[in-house]
Image (cartoon, helix red, strand yellow):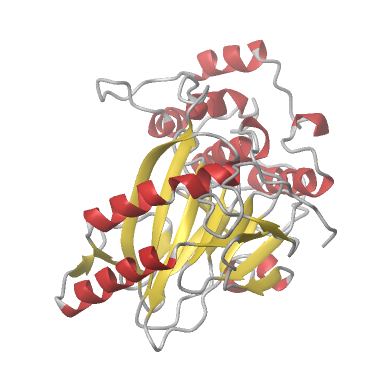
Length: 360
């Protein structure tokens, strides 16, 4: 087995210990655990989570694309992301994402905070984010008071959608994307970014609609245009998502919020488990002719450079738009189900959501 830059690839991806020191995993130790946990490649269909034909086919295709990535470091990173998404992380919802609305009073406060920040020239360039491309970086308006408000006030909504108790991990924003920015397709941190949402706040008058692309658990890719006040809940460490179209306009702003389960989650090191699941022959030279479009793994993101907008599924995606509707959740199959976590629309604030799947 050829292993160019093996040690570098492994050291870059291992989590830090509590002391902040970088842990080391050697290939011999990794393979020992690989064998102990009975991993085999290609993974049998019954190993994928969830067990829908569309999801299994989508993930099998991605693994075949990763196998043909020329750069060994990129290939290793691609496998690390994909094994979490495909079969290590459980799914907590039927589809993987859904669209709702935030309370109007909260939206009003957030919009006021954005416009005050712009008027007072409090928007500053964001430090480099690996998954964001463009000639100019996004801007950040730092309003920790409002960010904390979103994290706490929206937690009952996230718990209702996922039907479980959650630990708040992070609310991030306000990020203002700018002309030409792209958010490449990616998944988020498996340890902490499990149940997430994007709350779209506002955009400049000259901004064109800018869809988010996201893959559901039936193997479909969706392009969803969010309107101000729309909330896109999603399983962010499992569902590949991004905005590969280049943004056209002066600015577009959202807040990003992440939670993880209260029970039986942090006890497992999900990133380390992903290392153990990577196939034995990950560093071997690609063999045979690729059956799918070229896939490139750049840091934490995927890109298909031979396709329009750097992602082939933009040509076959389901395209739909907000606004969401107060008191309801819009599923990816366009079914609307009651969604009233606070009981303010005349229905009890029941956390349980019954999905009524209809064929797309």
